[in-house]
Each structure stands twice: as C-alpha cells, then as structure tokens.
Length: 289
Image (cartoon, rainbow, N blue to C red; front, side, top):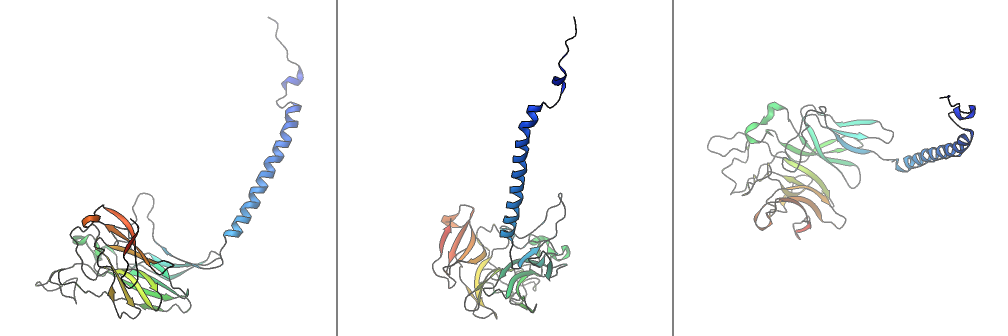
C-alpha cells in the first residue's frame, strides 16, 4: 500500500490558528495573576496590626511525641518550658517569662493594657510530678502579673490551702506531705485562669478547697473565686459548680462566662457546658448548655 503523506503544514505542533487563540487566554491568565497579587498585598496591609501580641510558646517534640498542655480533664498537666512571649508588629519577639522547669499558661491582658496576668506552674519537671496523683506537680501553680512597661512581676497567690470541713482531715499549712494523722493531698494547690475585673478585683479558678465531688471526672476539681489584687476579700462565687470550672472570661454586660463539666445530679449528661455568673455570685445560668 502506498504511504499516505500529510501536507507539511499538518506536521506543525501548533497550528497558526491555535496560537492566535492562545494569546488572549495567556493575557487573561497574566491579568488574573496580577489581580491576585494586588489583592494579596491589599489584604496583607489590611490584616497588619500595630499592636503587640502576648502568647505562650510551648516546646514541641516532633510529629511522633505528644505534647502535654492543660486541657479540660487535666487542667494541672503541662510540659516544662512554656514561656510567656511578646510579639511585636515587626515580627520580633521578647521573652517576658523564661521557663526551664516552670511553665506559663492562661495569659490575660488587663483592661488598661498595662499588665499581663498569667498562671505559672512552678516546677513541672518529671522529678516533681506525683505519679500517685495523676502526675500533678508537687509545687502547684500560682497567679502572677507582669507590667509591660517596667517588666515588674508581682505574685498574687501563694498556694493557699483552705480545705472545706467535709473534704477530709487536712493540715491547711501542708497539703503536700503532712504528718501521718492528716489526710494527704499529695500535690500543690492550683490557681489558674486569672481574669481581671473592674474595681481592682480578680476572678480565677482554684483547687484550694480540696473539693472531691461524688463524680470526680477532672483532676483536680477547680472552683471559681474572686479576690482583691492583694489577696484580700476572697470569695468562692460558684460552689454549685461541682463538676469543675475553668477559664472565667468577662462579657460586655459584666457577667463572667466559664466552662463547667456537667456531671452531677440531674445535669449528668457528661458534657462541657458554658455558664455565666455575676462576679458577686448571683444569677448563675447556662449560656450554652
């Protein structure tokens, strides 16, 4: 059979008419890319901030090792070395609180933006954890604040232990290792979640009462307190939250919002709800429940 020869112009990989049609398409692509670059620049400028950001920098150990930080069922667990950081608008950073064996959590800015309140675990190195108490730290955690101008640091709580009469036979001066005739808590008191209030008051959560509810699903059980900044006029404002309370946050109308594990009595649905209460302990009510 004779070989069929194609005309020379049919051997071209890009016919002239196809090339003519591609030119407008390429122009459209370039226009689209230019538009996206311009929009990215505009969005980047719009998202840029002119203020500092406070955050916690916690060590990470790679993709195959868990990192421990406070969470709802274990508010007293954290890896050592979590620093309090200050990020500036130009991307530079400062270390406000440098931790080796300690760790920072729950930073909160004051209303005048002059102070940062935070909770500090004094020593969470492995040698200071009590394996018989869910690996809680023997030295506990306290609330501090740092002035952003002077870098002055003030300690606001001091591991106070105020056990209720029904919690056991405790030595209020020694929750960790008391004489044999006393019950032993076995870990340091936790003071967490500082939230500054109007009028020089502070809301926070604490294990200082040694509460052991009938269904203790969190370790330990945290309760809500309000006090003056010097530690005076301490008040437990939500003793009814037996399933633990965490992260009090002030709303615009003056209420305190906090999370609580609903595990007691008629509310035993084993879920975390969000509740509100006034700082003086009135009007306890569900926000999301």
